Image 1 (cartoon, rainbow, N blue to C red):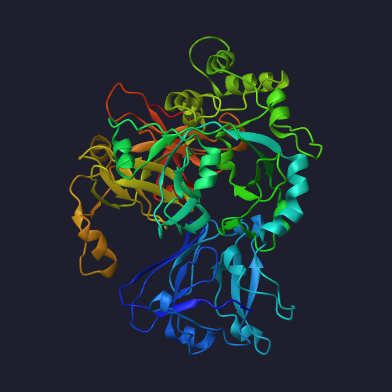
Image 2 (cartoon, helix red, strand yellow):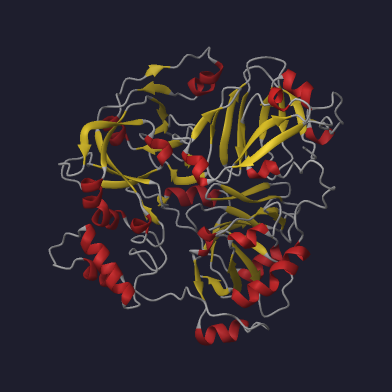
Length: 585
């Protein structure tokens, strides 16, 4: 049964409400009447969703508590006796939903994956009559419920002291001593400024600045996420003398106007510990409070960090694994000088080795013909691993992503021999881009591209997926792949009206073929950083189950290109007859 009251406000006809939980869009609704209600859940994400008037009156007390600081929203208590069945989805369950999506009773398309929950109305008196619908409930939302008949729970999320009590000794014994090596960009914060830290589509911190001395840091990661540091912490971790940004770069101009400068890190170690599935279970709500008051989510694969291990640990905070990629392990004499922690540490199994790209490709190209086959790559990697010298960083550098040239060299033959040939079938809304526009491509909670437009001719495409993600195409690529004459949108349609006003038109795709190949775990071993540079300069993350797309060059004579295509995007394509394996250019 629900125990945490949300904030609720009357909806407005034509209002577009997107339910976004931990960076994942799980519902999208346009309000079609003047009686529905908008609910703001009392969860980490504070997501919004819509309820028809009848459902609202059935589930909530009619009189809400005034909350002037929340505008038209009021706090409503759940009616007693309203129950839900909640079921956690397994990997086998997820396979029974072939597309990974289903339609909710109110018409929204909801994504489903292992670890999500399905909810169904329940009743002790009439169980079958109550079971009228099934809908998605993200794990964050489950924290608003408790088992029927269970005793009242204590405070939901663990405090700093509770986290230290559980994990301090574990971190100090089994952790790795790491330090930042990459410079960051930072600027002064403003009192009242709201800063959300979003890594790989997950909100990991949500802070409102309460002074004029804090600093806003832009991390040197694929997400370039923002986070806040109090002045004392910033000065303790970063060198005080900043470097002015190069004004000749378009992105730097935008950042400099906002006050950003480049800062180098002090070589201070932190103790990092990788969270296991069993560790995560010890945090009941999968969230805990940081020392600065932000609520941080935790899952297997994350890292818990203790700063300055020479001192008595007095705080622990979350560090997603994507951030740890940009740090360096402290070893040997430096480790002894830096952190002699009071507890005996277990040896790390993740020691890094120096390994150059020249060594890597020399080993791969066994017959020296300049062409790398999939078999050569696998044999070379296995031989190096047997010798204890397998690369632990991307071929493109110790910590950086693979280059586009390396990705084409590693995967082109593999994609052509084992992939499928597809063509885009779904029209999309497209508008002219504007110089300086910042376009983040965001699919199922993952940032897969991040681009600042540097000209006046690029186009912005809005994908025909549940996320309706946006991405940028150069004018040449747009003209090569889309019919130039788009159809105008219906401005009287409340959904299309806002897109019409921004210059979107509906364009049909040209029947251009491309190869797509589904990545397996063995493929990811060839890209240990799990990221690569797209031809347009953006860093793209990889994981098992993604697709690599291979497209021929727009300009004759240019090389082919490889880019990421999440499975959600592939739904907008169809197979070409006979288009599998051994395809010619």
